[in-house]
Length: 243
Image (cartoon, rainbow, N blue to C red; front, side, top):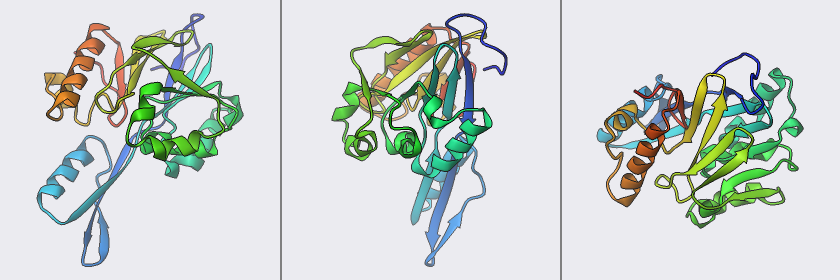
């Protein structure tokens, strides 16, 4: 990721405009206690620890919201609805209005990644894999997309824009995709929730959960490693360089 100028015709600058955060809470004696740790993956580990203690435990999670600037101006994963106003402010800081976006691209259509669409310009197209429309959580997202130009991604891979490809990586959801972005620093993979929730499972190539979904995710991880990316940006982890 770089703050420098775009070098080639199809190269992008990739910037996280709102970084991921996790807020873990427990309900005790009719009051809510919020854990002070908000970083990921540290807060996720605290969440699992608190769950083992029993009681009412929950977590609110912001994903990495990513801006691509190059041949197109693309916003990837706007985030949950609590991020509406912060997202507009983040764009304004960069000299952009919501109408300046050429495209909004979703790694998947779960509410924590799509909710902030509500305040974005309704004329901006939204790209999402068509398999997401069969996901059980699609009805929660589809209302936000009503009346917007929808760009369905079909099949196993394709081009999103000059310098940006997509790869279908089902497992976390039926239509999860990763975006493969050409930059001056090399290939950057925007992985959404295909990678996570903990970095050690990716490093060990161990399924994060049992069953076919977990096996699909490990297959996707192997495919991502084979691309030899310079950087992977997961949905809910800091960016990292794969070994």
